[in-house]
Image (cartoon, rainbow, N blue to C red; front, side):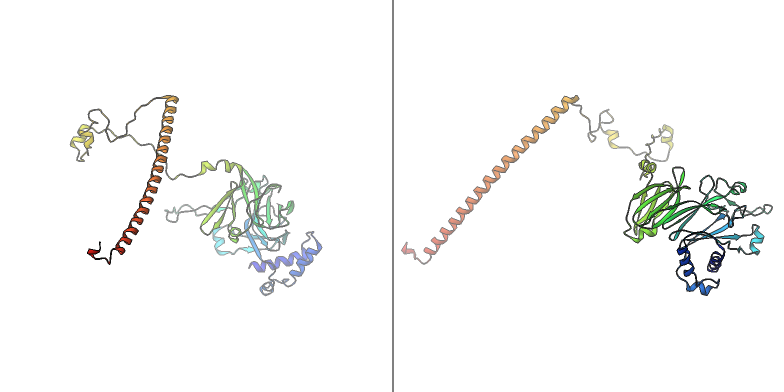
Length: 407
């Protein structure tokens, strides 16, 4: 269905749209879409040069003549084309179940450099307009038959009333190389900024930092950039991490508060921050393994409660028959012996310890000398023993063949 709408919109753009851009670029676009003039699926399937990269639903102005915002679908393609498709949704619940959603392409087309990555909407005051949500309802709760069932949508926008939204809003579009801010419903480009020329943007998100909204971008060359909204002024450009692993490109995402997350390995999540306020409060945000709690005081056990109670009280033998009963400290406990106080006492104690170490070292040296002398004496005894054994063997060989009367 989207492909058919895409083809119809291309036809209306090529024939009726009067947006002024480079003639060579328009000629290349016409050549690339020369085979997809019709709305048939077969002709579009043959053209594989362009693909849809981003879809965003939101309440916007599908046509320049619209007075109030209506549900719209923003479509971004890989060739930098932005299509705005109005949706007609029945408001009544019964009509919604019977009637289908009707789609009418408006022919509104915008062009950017590179593949479209992100859509966002701001009100006239520069505040981010979040997508509306439906309030959760418990299915098991008892229902009131007299109360009508209605689906209620809640808006995050500060100007959620229809009168305030009737003044228009801002649409932020970010691609791989460029960012633009359009004023709706006039569809006029208010601000434009070329993010990078030598590289391309991998991830772009509209986040809230320090009570303001900015556009955060992560480029393939490792640069983390932030742009102000809606003026698109460069606020920060830091060379953080070069793209060495495709896992980083697939998992990198920005969050509110000047933070970002990505998978550094299959089992590790890396968290970074580019906000000084977040960095200053980082130590306070660290969690603790245990929560420190003061030890409660033991309750006083009454005599009657202990006498009539069924629970037996365990007594300590040291407590009953030891020195603790006589008012003395137990021998098994460490006892503090006060010594000479002050700095002089500490110096004397330190000097005594140094002297003991020196004496121990001297004794160790003397022991080493004695061991050396003992080793020399042992070597001399071994030499004399070998000499004695040699002479005894020679004497044995000499006297072996002699008779008793020959001596």
